Length: 223
Image (cartoon, one colour):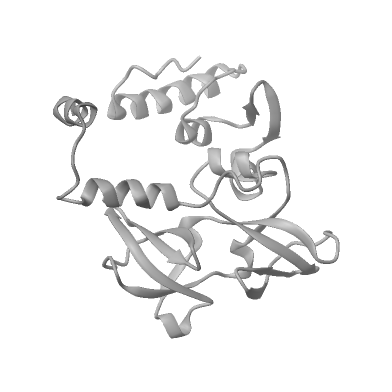
């Protein structure tokens, strides 16, 4: 149960590779419990995602990541933008007032669905060229990419891109049909996938005039 949890990041990554090599060399099954999504994706042949002791999905790392069965799985394994949509017909979906093509079929006519788009699958384009457009509310440099939050019609999207934007910029987003994942509505619908709280926390931390509580001061000193 989370055997690498006490290790620092670099050593934990080294041990992930070492454990995977040992498992392959011995040819035996390991049952590995973790809350670290990166560990689950990099070390597993099969992943079982559970919530409250109930299995939500079983599959390969690529299946779990690319075809999540509900909003809980989509949010737990990686970052996800999850918006309300309507399946107009096979291969046609509408969300945020936009109709577009997708690669999914087999849903009911005008069936409400959850639309999932991974942040790395969104292309940033000029506002007039995008499927949707909105205002940048926060930008975080992550080393290999920028993590950008964009407010589009009140919904905060996350974009991961190597292109830089500034807070306040008006940008457009473009999404290819095969990068749009459609899920049936579930008990988890509406609970995940909007980065409004993420952006608000970032704005508060970035505000030089914001007052720190005693708890904030202790946390800041400890870090």
